[in-house]
Length: 405
Image (cartoon, rainbow, N blue to C red; front, side, top):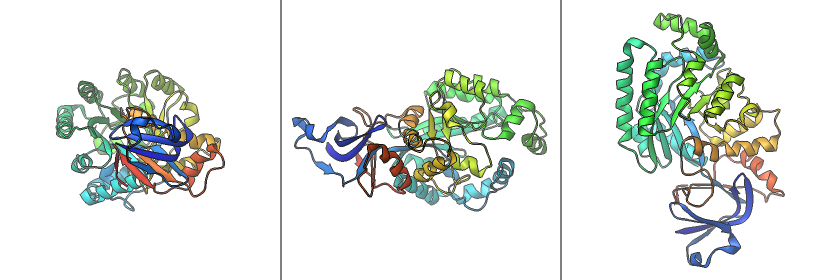
């Protein structure tokens, strides 16, 4: 067992001065440094440097490690040209994204304080790397396939990957289920995958309404996706619609990703069903998409800031993502937005992914990301914004009580 005494600790969305955290793998007590119970007096104690802020470990709820090698291969600016470039180059990128590049991606995330990730696996090539990661990993095996004639084959491939990853389940690794998107998964295959998630009680995630083209296709069978599906598959109509797709998830809270094109009716449905949203501002900007209106959902649907993968981003640094969000949502109050963003990488994703962390509280995992500010804050209200603006890599990282950085 150990004690950390920190000048500032982030607790329940606020900052408390001169606090002590007593922990081993989990947190046993949190109290003012002057009030440490006598039973803990002889425990080894670490005093953090002046102006240090102890946060719960940061969580990147949505990342594609299998595209970690991409830099200048794909086309940015609009969604359909990007998607076509992914289709043309995905095998090459996946081949280049070897074990070393994925391990480097994990280390880069760890340096920015990311102690847990939601890893979307399309091929299973990242399984060994994720199973051996220092971070806590929710490993989302992704299912895809819209052709009804091949549903059994699609499901068999997906189930095989899921069961292979399930064998690695541990206190830090959880095999889970991802649905690619409404436009790419047949309703029958969708229901089969959701039933598997229910059977194994895993977290569930899906891309949803990422682009204007997706909404046009699902609502009107028109737009860029019509030409895309007709050219590649000879298909002129979507296999589902927005309402039917969302109905399949009604009884199972799910982390939906992007959702830049959700309208009020869909927001009400997501709220009613207890779903959450992963917000990837840099990815959305690079693919020419609208801004997720977090002000319209924040008090109704929890959102989790995430980097997405390097197929649509230039780094997996969570501070880069928060700074981008500060600029993207320029009409919102700066300090309130900074506070909201820190919730979006701690408590919100912990709840969305079913993790026993994300908050500094008794009985939760001892996952900490420690930031050191240059100057002492004049006001506690400054800490969130200073943290985001002036941090690239954190000072220390603990995962389950073990220092990793």
